[in-house]
Image 1 (cartoon, rainbow, N blue to C red):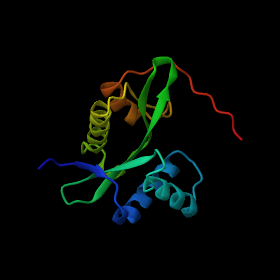
Image 2 (cartoon, helix red, strand yellow):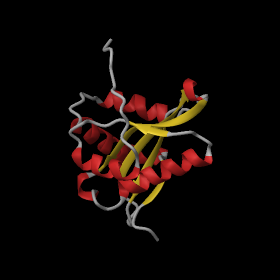
Image 3 (cartoon, helix red, strand yellow):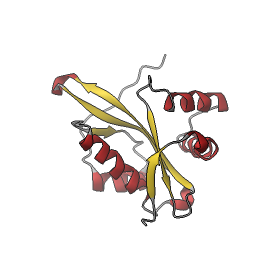
Image 4 (cartoon, rainbow, N blue to C red):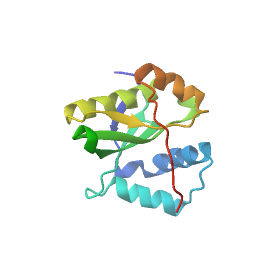
Length: 149
């Protein structure tokens, strides 16, 4: 049995998922309340919402990582892609292969569903994650802009 397993998030995962998602928000200094996590949790279990969640579990079955993805249209390419919105691994489990397993699982989902690309963004100073990302994907030349509303 591999050290890390990846599976779809389940209703019974709410508490460990919430702890990891809260830690992810703190990592990015993003204010987040329990009500906000409740809303995202609802999205993850709503078939009408494009967002879906994955968890990475260790050999004991404990959740050590989370990922959230959604399909997106690519008009210029006349195709669809898979966008990785959030990826977080508990600091005590970094180096365990959890992040690699989540990304490999997402990549396989994209292949199986004929998506043309898997895309994500990260902070420029997220050096540890970027070390992995540089190994499994190509850094693009595109810049990201936001209009805050």
